[in-house]
Amino acid sequence: MSGEKPTEAPKCAINSERLWSSIMGMAALGGLPGGGCDRQALTDTDRAARDLFVEWARAAGCAIKIDQFGNIFAIRPGARPEAPAVLLGSHLDTQPHGGRFDGIYGVMAGLEVVRAMNDAQILTESPIAVVNWTNEEGVRFAPGLTGSKGFAGILPPSAIADMRSRDGARFTDELERIGYRGDMSSSTLPVAAYLEAHIEQGPVLERAGTPIGVVTGVQGVRWFQLTVEGADRHAGTTSMDVRRDSFMATARIILELRNAALQLSGDVRFTAGRVNVMPGSTNTVPGKTVVEIDLRHPDEIVLDRMEVLIAPTAARIALEERCIARVERTMDVRPVHFDSRIVDSIAAAAAGRNERFTRLASGAMHDASSIAQIAPSAMVFVPCRDGISHAEEEWAEPEHLAIGCAVLADAACNLARVVP
Ligand code: GLV
Ligand code: MN
Ligand code: MN
Image (tube, rainbow, N blue to C red; front, side, top):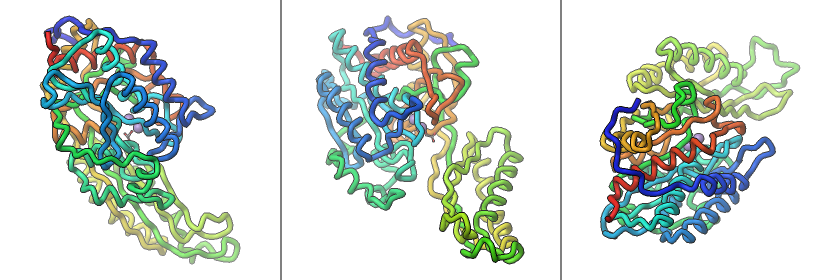
């Protein structure tokens, strides 16, 4: 909770209605009947969201730059144009049954900071840049955090260019198709600090009754692809004892891994969210099953202990079911501890607005994990209803969104240094 020395007086007033209507304007693109959004990366709806962001950012006086990963940077010049930028942002892509706020809030809050600085005629020494990172969610193209990993040099450009979507499309071809393959080099935008505003996506702030989360870090995430191969056979004539049923083997493997993970730590998160059972016919014993596993924990040692269990467990159960299993790690995002100076500047900004806050680590992954590898970074969270996210019901109160945005603005002004 608070106790930090307050920052200087707030420097610009956030327009809460403008922020809300921008978020709702984005939500209309790929909107679902249940109130959520389906706006997966590099689709036509992603293009529409990008076009709208670019239109709004240009109207706010920003210069637009796009890099080879399709990341969009809207740059508000500073008094010292060559100074490293204070970067604010998040992502506009969503889950298939995504909400209206996950990611979108961080980009729209960054834009609102620029608009509010314009209203208050604030000049900063460092430029302020608002970024939309490409494919944070990793749904259509896996793994996620693609754009921020490319920008931070964590993934080589060629590996990103050749990523394939579920329907076989190539990443770079899709970027080209939607008109967002740029040529800005990362080195032309040095970053002094990165701040990402986001809904919490969990229950901590709501339970604590605090409108602001000062995020100290992000837990580690690993993705694995488990492939189990048996044999396609007739469902009516093949007796149970000779079947090589890849899905039954997979189901047993997943249950056993889930139990093993829980024995290692009560804080573990184990999810098998995508399963492809082939050939996908009711009356054929499935000969091949591919399942994607998402494993999370704040402690890398727990992730290591779990990882070494996966292949032997899968091999043993597959053999019992007359199948063969293989496992591949497809993503590794190490646990991140944010830079204490940037974390403290967010705490000071909250204290400066007399807002109560809670320090917490993020359960969800974020582009800030990538950018923290190249620049001091931190995040500001606001509560979301019942801690629900990656679901159409996702909801955040306009008042909380505005407070989070005001804290973001003050921290950004502080780090970019307002010219008196
Ligand atoms: C991204 O939203 C994640 O945490 O998976
Ligand atoms: Mn997000
Ligand atoms: Mn998400």
